[in-house]
Length: 253
Image 1 (spheres, rainbow, N blue to C red):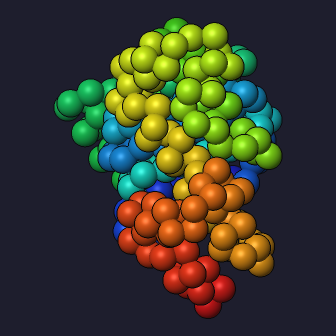
Image 2 (tube, rainbow, N blue to C red):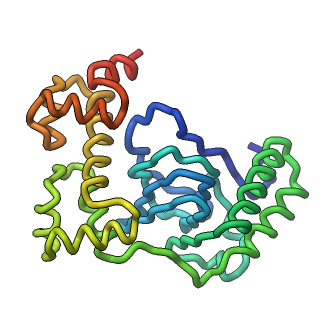
């Protein structure tokens, strides 16, 4: 990276890639960004969840710890701007900002990000400065598409590191609502029912355990709330296309 260029960008492409679970928590000395062309990414920033889909741009304030909790066939771009290079309304960003760009505007931004990747690789400072200026004029500092508090709270509970993955009814009880109500709110905000996110949390945790530990497969299933080994094997294969043992072997090879 050319340290004289106040910008960093790289492509995101998890399409067709064997996903291995949660990306480690980190923070950046820059204002971080994620922009998706397709797919989805679930990002947690200091206890708050942000679900990014196609055409969504997420800005993360400099120094704020964040983690990628889940992603499905995500294609797009990620990187960062130094706070000093941003317009005043964004340089003072003190909380994450998510904005949705639809139709032609989203297509335009995707092409602009693509050109910025090329310019960054070539060290083309002039294009980077003009391109990022054009990009940032599209960002409205007061607009956000945050998830409702209940939905964000549910996702934080489901993906909380070190906590067991529970049946859907247990999450509803813990939040003081009926399961039907919680399911309606989650599906309306994310496009997926409660069961989908529980399955994603289970599969992500199972992948990490299979990759990073030597736990017997039956114990991995128990650790993610599926005590029946045969059912766990069917569940894992349905979501990954591989058996748990084949996945572990591929990761170790």
